[in-house]
Each structure stands twice: as C-alpha cells, then as structure tokens.
Length: 379
Image (cartoon, rainbow, N blue to C red; front, side, top):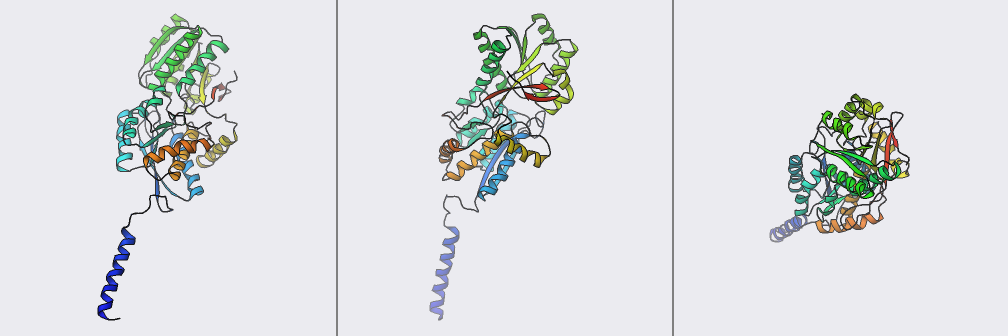
C-alpha cells in the first residue's frame, strides 16, 4: 500500500474505533450492566438482632435473581444504627447521590422511613420498606412503597380481638413515643377500642430503650385494666415482663407488633410470658408453600430458623429488580413498572399488589407463646 493511501486508511480506522468506544450505550439492560440495590439496615445497636432478617432477605432474593436473570446485581448496605434518624439521612443521601442506586430497600422503623422519604421522593428514587407500618407512610410520596401492612389494620383487628373475642372491656396502653409506628398504631387501637364501647383506664408513654416500668406498673395495679397493650422494643419489653412478674401482676399483655418475637425474649422471659402475651403478625401463614420454600433456603444458608422480615425484604427486592428489568432505566419508568410487576408477582409474605399509595393489603395473624415457642394463636 502506498504511503498516500496508508495514512488516510489509518485515520479512518482510528475514527471508527473511537466511535465504537465512545458512542453512548443504549439504556436497555445488557448482560454487563449493573443493577444497584441500596439497603437501609440496622447492623448495630439494640435492634441489630431483631432486624437481621431484613438484609438477609435481600441477599436471598439477589442470589435467586442472579440465577434467574444472569444479571450483575450489586447490593450496597448502609447501617442506620437501630432506627437513628440522623444516620438514615446520611445513609440515604450516600446511596442516592454517591452510589446512584436504582432503588432502595428500607427503611426499617417507621421514623427512619419517614425521615428518608422526602430525600428519596425529591430525587425520584424508589424506596420500598419491608418493615415500616405507620399509617402516615401512605402519604409519604409517589416513590415510597412498602411490602408491609399499615398499622391501621393491626390496631383495628387487635381492638376487635380484645373487646369482642376475649371480652375484655378495660384497656391500658404503654407506648415508646420515639417510634412513630408505635404511636400511630396504639392510637388506632385506642380509638377503635373506645368506639366498640371499651374504656381506656391508663395511657402511659416511655422513651426509646426505657427499662424502668415500676411507676407505670404501679398505676396499672391501681387502675386494674383487663389488658395492657404495649408498643415497645425488645429491651423494653423484656424489662416490662420482668418487673410485671416481680410486682405480682398477672394482667394479659397484647401488642400490635411482633417486636418481641425474638430468641432473646424467649430465653430471658419466655416462661414468664407464656400464656400472658398475644401479638400481631402480618403476612402469609407459615404453612404457605412459598413461605416454606424460603424458610428452607434460609435454614440452609444461615443454619437457623427464619428470622422476622425476611419474607417482606425478599419480596421488596424481587419486585424492585423486576421493575428495573422491565423499565428503560429512567426513574419514572421504574416507578410505573413497579406497579405493573406487582400485579403478577406471587409474594412470599402475602399479597404484594401495590395500591395507588404504594401500600399492600395482607392477612393479619395473632401469635402467642406456647411450650417455649412462638406459635399461632387460635382465636
């Protein structure tokens, strides 16, 4: 080839290579593209053991999704340190602005979800909570979803159980006011119970992690309620049952929450609480085939019985990734596809079809302690 022909040919070749390298890729997913999932979890603090199931549910879902789709899925977990609102604001900003995740699974406690929601909403980043139950989350934004039921259903059903099935007419309440979900649900329970004709004889509050209930329990003795409804975390719940036993109180305790369903609770006060605790658990019955399958996967991977919130986190992750895969990768389209994929998805945790507010409707179960185990309470 002559020098005159060789030089132009080389220039053309360089231009073609440059175009191949630098022409923007299609926004459609390819096998080499990454789907990024942000997770708001509680890796440290009082709730780390109770809430350990949430990130594990994400992990199990991602393992199955990688096999199913062959996609490169990355999980970025941020510690919100047991529902600390300051920590969650820092975490959500990092996930959205630095990591640039496609969607977020979280928060956990309602207060952290409500703190993070405005940031997710303003950036049009999907946030799917697998644990938050405060009724106010319903109106938290167009990009805020949850695979967990609103507390409105919990409080209403528990009030009816107390008044109509157990035939208890006098109720006392003890609530940790640092948690929005506890507060809103106990209020729903209280108002429903009054509407049914019941009497609220005591309504007391405590701060997060409170462990001194002697004064409140003295008031319980004075007012003599038929039932005590508690909205408390694990540490507070254990302290309450210990002191209740010490003071000779045999009053039935109920809770709209499953926060006391923990191996440490059984070890420390399980014998005391047996026969004197009824609490609400949302979702599929443990006997459902889908739940059983996930339970087996969990047992194989972690060598222990399935933890709380695994199923809801599993579903949140599955739905988020399926929405991303169906979308053109714009945030608005991911949101639209999340609604559509939820209609065809069979949830491990129960119904996962999102309504216009991003909420789901699920069965509500009651559980208790029998023979040293958490079991379903037969109404």
